[in-house]
Length: 154
Image (tube, rainbow, N blue to C red; front, side):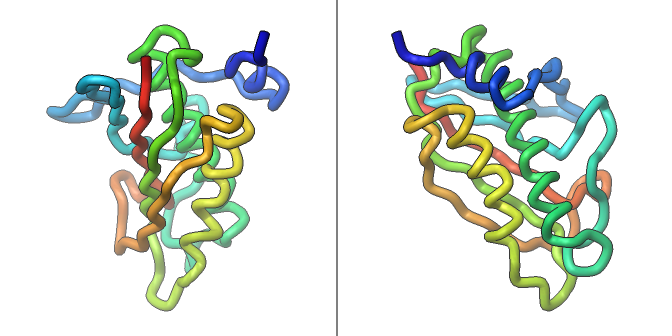
């Protein structure tokens, strides 16, 4: 029997939080056919943002990378809320990583690695994905990073 996603998370020392409720007039995830889309997830841990401000000014790349991992944890929490069982994930198709960036900051891809590395560790081979890493002037609540995902599911 292959290792479950929940077992990998346990091995990584990660307990998924309760999926965050939407803060406005949208849904936290949407399924169409065999695709599951998540709304953008912020780097929340215990209800608190783990990094705020702009990368390259207020936040260093290492902290941004850690924030991206928290976004990815919250993405998996939304997937679990949507599916009931993470093992219904066939594969992670794509993530889009938004990085609040000061002018001249060019390490968005390194920040995004925090999410990509975690998701591959948690999901195994099915966690390998396409990705975009995008610099932006600001994000909701002054979050340093926000990430959305698309999964292929059963």
